Image (cartoon, rainbow, N blue to C red; front, side):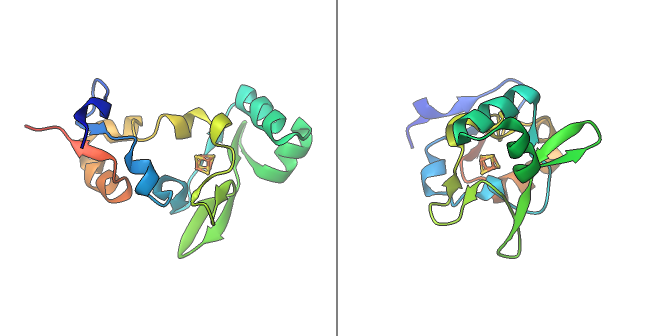
Length: 132
Ligand code: SF4
């Protein structure tokens, strides 16, 4: 592995190899049901990318949870997938405008906590634990 490519962030006990995404079948977009939050600016950008009106985009692709919006999911294999997960290409259909939550994976606050690292390692082949 080319260690120069590994991404390192303060407060995390692992590095991330973005090259692993090429071999992975979109594990971070599938699995158990969860929220994929989108903020108002991201909603505008994704609607524009899809070439549809913002309100149509909201109706068709988002669910409202209290005052926030999350991208809808669809059944996939034994669990769920984000509605924008392309099952043939095993990738994201809105990749250039995917929300911050997706762009920042796997550096989520949850994974600052060591107790979730085994779960993360199972999901993401790009995770490389820091040497002790
Ligand atoms: S928006 Fe794209 S990157 Fe984010 S979960 Fe959905 S398919 Fe995956």
